Length: 506
Image (cartoon, rainbow, N blue to C red):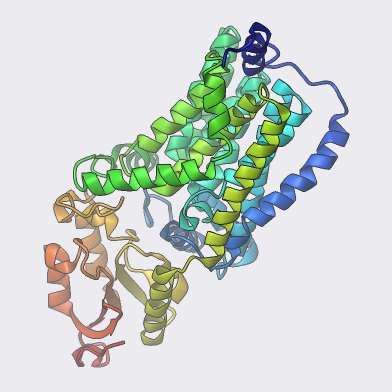
């Protein structure tokens, strides 16, 4: 259908925004937020309700919980406990455990609700500044409705991406208001929550360039960005910080091995997210056919976020959370030039999708968590509080559930075999481990042999039969004493004779 010139001009003007970086919308800000904040807070609480159903939702939460316990007892990040992630979220877990105890993730789940609410508020403020009061309400509501539009294990877990998102939104909010130093700090916080959070620097840099990119402004954003990152490196171990967050993940980021498996996962997660955005995608596509100009910083934000999802070639569902803030803003922008009833229809469609994901969250079973809990019970019954154990698997939550310290700084077999990232093909094994890990691992077990070793590989390609060093350690000092749903529990030989008995089922 042909579009009237006036409508086309209005399309371009609306998508671009009312000024160079958006003009302040007149009106009573206090009254506006007094009405909108309770709505967004209630919606954030409702959409995150499933997160409270289980003690934890994903191995990442288990990893963070174990890290935080080690740090609370004097451990050092990137030394006595390691991960490929920056330090901000482990520190957040550590702080929560210091204030509220380490037996529950409930405070972290509440913080995750707060993080999602803050993200929605920042997006609402961005949209309101550009397109008016109604657009602000639309952006905040749309974001919260799509925010759980993935597998519940990805969307409901209180992990890296959830705490990264308000930082990315804050970076755009500050850049939109020419607060370049604060924008740099926000980009740094996003980067320190997860490396891919730094992708928001691209749209921030575009806004800086569009504003003139004076030396003073460039210096401010550079100082804001570099200061927190350097401080984090100095507060940990600079060499360890660089290795574990940047240079030591070459094998992890490789595309080789399990290509079809990984691409299939990426396609499925993309389709799941598209279903969650059922109310947003059609307006955006419709508007693109009318006005292709649009707000370039929003498209750059989406493109840089998509590049971050692709980085590493793993396509886990929680990676896709990074796409949701720019999608919500682009959907809001598109709805501004369509008839008003289209906004209501978009929100209703998105709300219906949200209801499906909400039900999924309440009904989804957690067989992996149940298995980890049964393993934890077996470990707890066979060890004392001061005993150390080794769980050879990819579910570090077993340590946390059993309240037992790990015997190694490497909390999963993935770091020692490259099974991390869902690889299930030829690129898994001892020779594909993170560089330098096996000598350290062998020395840890030699100095402080674990009381129990739990082989939780259950037929996966990182089992002891494919890892010669681990097979040798088990053969020389351990005997199997128990099976728990396919996992084999090994006890150290000579410890009260426990390692001499036959294997018992469980």
